[in-house]
Length: 551
Image (cartoon, rainbow, N blue to C red; front, side, top):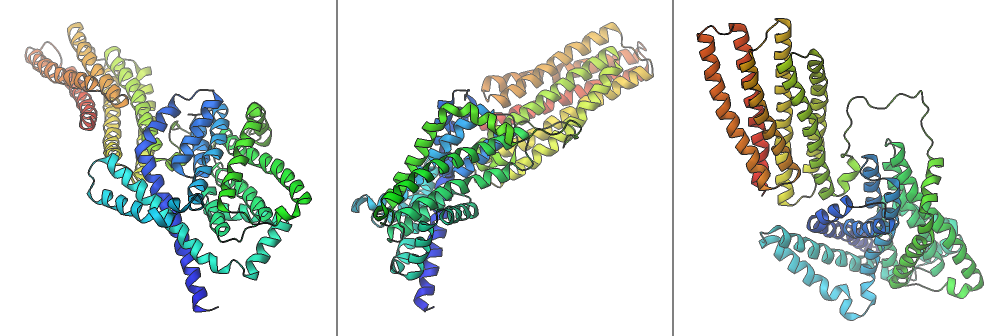
């Protein structure tokens, strides 16, 4: 091997690296700029499968990978956010959306003006200038998209220039000839490459680069592309390992969709190549690859769309139910909205974490109400319920915090980073509210054990303060769920009212103690209850203040 050959290998590897990195940077910019809009679209998604197809296209255009979209769908299904009826439409749309990248790569064959050599340097220059000097998130994200697209084009050019001198090399002629003559070899090659890269968009981009150099025949290219469409299922199938049965069925939906498409097109193209051998052994360009890739996915979607329900039922046969005697994999409360597969899209991950934090808040709110009743009515039954809730709250706090650590390592916008930081604090404050509810339950237990009863006047005073505390918690959680200044203001007003009333009640009770109108033991319990109520409102005020800082 000559030094020139080594240089060309390095050039091809460098070009591939720039191509993949450019896709990554461009995808990050797209996710940051429109990720929340797609999230809102996903939230209103119904069983309308046509709308689900459109969502799948949109998400895949942003992620630049149907594998990533499908993995995320598996995560949504596993988290109970999406059902299989919705998932099948999104998966079909994902296969169509992944064709966009191949059309971008083939732009250099559209004419001299669209040649990457012509405008890629300008894209990188403008993008880099924006990244260095832009302050606003929206403009900064536009810079990422432009720079990523430019780097992607430069990577394609590098790979093309490195491969061009070898278009007549016997080794490549033999390799593509063997894959053209043996469909299974071509399919396996495409499958392996895509499974390794974990992106059909990237693997097809590599094939297009070789096609630009005049190396890829129609028969070899078609079979490799069929294998690439099957290889994109591998990531989703792997992600389904350890997931719930329904999530595994979502992964198999993707496999069935592509497998049926490969069978249909494999037979059709095999017949065409048999009767038109000259066409089979002619060379195809990158535009032809883009066209076939799009036709394949659109035709299969149109063909299988009416049979979506049957595909869903078929996955039920492939993924068997667990035996009744099998024990559940996990004990304790489970997180509904969080799944590591959703981390494929940081915007989705942030929004779903907010939803899980709100759910933790709702559970904590129930614990608070139970602790209030336990104190007012000396109910040991409700004391035990508070203790059980506290275990669930502590578990949720640990798991949500761990998930937030993973999100914080993703590519986030400045606003998303701020939200993540505030969610860390919010989880801590909610957990502390749960601790104070547990303290109140312990005080109720002391009341029962020592036969302590508050006077009707003292009970009424406590009940009034508890209403203010309850309102401060309710409006704080509403503010976190729907960030609006009106909710923040309400939460903070109720917290101020709690401070005022708590101070007033403390003074009155000390006067009662001084006048021997109540026993010292009951007095200490009463004052401890006041302290815990005031602390609950303080933590609610903290949660509202975090939201206020984001507005």
